[in-house]
Amino acid sequence: MKQSNIFKVFTVITIVFISFLGCQNKQQKKQSVDSIAKNLYQEPHRSQLHFSPQANWMNDPNGMFYDKGKYHLFYQYYPDSTVWGPMHWGHAESKDLVHWKELPIALYPDSLGCIFSGSAVVDTYNTSKLGTAENPPIIAAFTHHDFVGEKAKTNDFQKQSIAYSLDGGYEWQKYSGNPVIPNKEKIKDFRDPKVVWHEASQKWILVLAAYDRVKFYASANLTDWEFLSDFGIEGDHRLWECPDLFQMKVADSNEYKWVLLVSIQKNAPNDGTATSYFVGEFDGIKFNSEVESQKWLDWGTDNYAFVTWNNVPKDDGRVLGIGWMSNWQYAQIVPTVNWRSTMTLPRELTLVKSASNYALHSTLVREFEQLRNTTTALGQMTITQEKLIEGSFTASQAEVDLSVDLQQTTASAFGIKLQNELGEKLVIKFDKKEGQMFVDRTNSRKDKFSDEFFKNVHAAPIDFNKEKMNMRLIIDAASIEIFINEGALSFTSIFFPSEKFSAISLFADSGVCNFSNLEVHHLNSIWEVQE
Image (cartoon, rainbow, N blue to C red; front, side, top):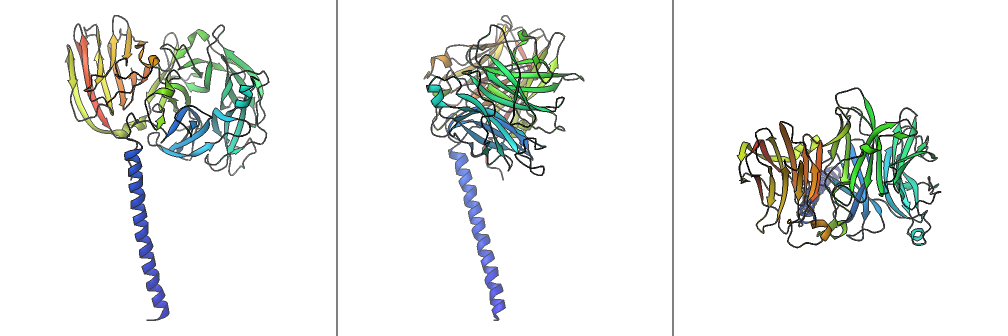
């Protein structure tokens, strides 16, 4: 055989061998991913529908932006413990807002301090001059928190800084001129910058929390900032955090309004933390609103620091956001082992005008429906006491959709109950006499790990004067998200039963309740390996 032919045969054998190894490696990699999915994401209380990091502590969502087909989610992260510590920015990305890929840590503490909450924008026209016209940068604005200064009680230990990325948000460089907004007034709580583009003034606007109010700044280049104004409620001295500012078109109209989100760290409607909002006008300098119109984005105890994604494509047109699904009253002592905290499901916000005011409605993003697997359709059910819902679904991983005919319902109260064989239960009750809905998790676990977690039944106002009320409930291993009347009211609550809830039932007190359009969807896990 000629040498050239021998070489050709050797080359073919080598290619076949390498291909075989590649297949083996691919199979091993898939087995490894399968193993991660089966082990890391199958612990007790691990959410199957919501993003959580593989391990350790997480809180507020940060730096959220969309670019090149991917939604980026950064978050407060402490990689060395399951309780809060020196903050980093964790990082995850998704192509569909449903399945998430956890990425390496994006921002680490440095000589100026650890990395508290903030935001990120795509600097499309390279206004910062930190990139190029051909490769514009991503700019992250965040709070540097100096623990040494805090210990020394200097009160100026929180300052605003920026970092930039030239590869789409994966590798970051801190700006050499940090901080870009020093804390000249020495405000103890001075943090959480959110940056947005204001088209009318052709400037970047930054809003940050300053104890019991927010402050607005403007910049043409993201590095030099000018103070504009502040906004707060006279006499209300609750701590404000994680503000967000965006313009929205009012549904079914040509009217536009500005919305300011503010998270309140204590004394929310059901105690502890919650996200509130104001609807008003922003002229590039000042935000104006009827301050008594402050409303609650979610009435549950477990939707905090809700903020929106920047740079969502205009042809999409949605306002999309996500929150931290916990509460500072008990976040560090919930009974999870390898990790702590979960994000809410991503939501779409719409602004609806009634005869007297404006209201934000919150619904699940449409992409969530891809998780539906089998559906149990039960149609109409008339309940007089309590009835178990039977079907091919898992109670701890299900979506329940139903309507209630309020005109034909004579029951004084009705609702839904989740329970397990240990007698632990979560009860969602709609009380017509009280004009409220209640979420009762006081008996959701026999081992009560926190007095604050179990002490109260939580409530929200409900209008029972309508003909019908529709409900959508998303039940995960350790949470429930409730959406009433297409998101006019949302309610998020976490729970930690000793064993997963295995049954769902409907009930009615002192009369009948007519449930209709009842469907229960079994939902796939987001951690299942995608081919």
